[in-house]
Image (cartoon, rainbow, N blue to C red; front, side, top):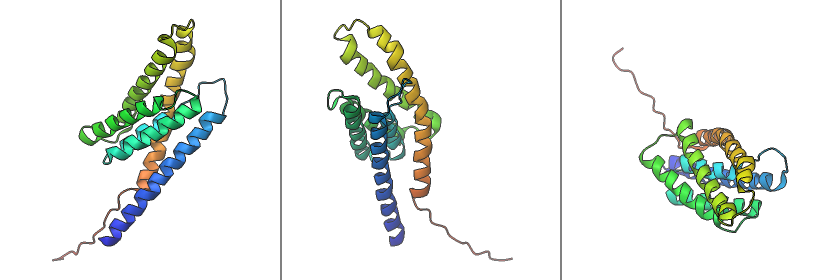
Amino acid sequence: MDRKMRTEKRNLIIRRILYFFLAATSFVIISTVRTTLPMPLLLINLGVCAAVFEYDSPVYCSVYGGFCGLLLDIAENTLFCFNGIILTFCCLMVALIFSCFLHRKLLNFILLDFGVIIVQAALHYLFYYLLWGYDRDQAILMEIFIPELIATNIAGIAVFGVYKLIGHFLGAVREHYIEEQTGM
């Protein structure tokens, strides 16, 4: 039993280090790659996916979501803590929803990920363009926000697969028992 607990603790530490490594890698990709195609905001997917797979620790999920949000603020050169606050709250809510109601299924993740992406994009659009009466706010919505929203949600499928692999190899340790057959 002691060996199982040590192995699970080791797996938890390695898993969370990998999560932060994935966030750092996504930050580098988002902040350095310039393309004419819509760039998916992988940090949103990473925060939501961590909330799906680590829902038994909602505090960790909210801290990791806030960390991903802060990295997104730096990468997009937006107001510091804007996305951090949004993702902290959203990741906490996703973790609580998964701990009480939902199972770790791809469809559940895609729907909640889409909801978080919509909340982030709507608040970004509201506070940066609509509120200040920007002249081309409709064009920005159609040309930037909606394609980015779709690309981010599609990229979430790959992120879910990566987190599922990490959870498979570094998840809870299962004990195997060998039963004796009697009477044959």
